[in-house]
Length: 248
Image (cartoon, rainbow, N blue to C red; front, side, top):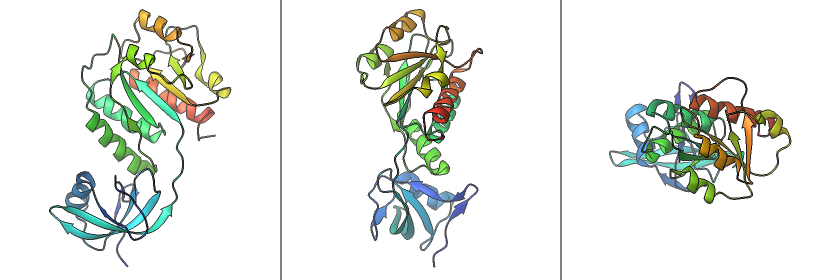
C-alpha cells in the first residue's frame, strides 16, 4: 500500500482543476506539481488527497513523476461534494501582506466569492488576482474546504452597485453610525447575502450616501470600536457564520 503524504497540518490535500472520479488519471497543475516535487519530495506510489470544488475529495496515488509534472490516479472518494455557505465578501483592497492574510482567513471562514472594490480612499491601485487565487486555494487545502472561493475582477464601487444582483442583500459595515448590529440583523436574514467593508480611513461620505440609497443595501455596525479594514471584514464574516451561516 502506498504511503500517505502528510505535513504539519495533517494529510496532504491539493486543489486541482481537472475532473476527479474513480480510476481517473489527473495531470496536476503546475502549482501542485511543484509543491509535491520540490517541497514534499514525492515519489511514485505516494498518496494524496485531491479536490476540485465539484467532485468531492479523492484519495489518489501518484503515478508518473517527472520534471514536466505529476500525474495521480483517483482510488476512492473520501468525502462527497458538499455545498458551501452562500456568503460573498466585497472589500476595498489593502496593502499586500494584510490582503494576503484577509484572503486566507476569509477562505477559512467559508466565504464563497471575493470581490475587490475600489473606493475613493482605497490606497492600492492594482489587485493581483493570481496571487489572491493562490492564497485562497492554499487556505482551502489547509482548512479542509471542498471548494475554493471565486475571485472576481476588481471594480469601482459605483460599477459594483450598478451590476449588483438585486436578490442578494448587501450588508454594509457602516462605521458612521445609525445602524443595527450585524448579529441582530443576521438573525432575521434570509436569502443570498454579501458583506461589504471599506478601506483604511473608511468610506467617503458620498459613498455612504450612495450605499444607503440602494434598496438591497442594509447598513450594519460591528460595535463601538473602529476596526482595521482587514479586522472588520473577518469580524463581519465571523458574526455572519455564527448567526446565519454553517456555524450554528
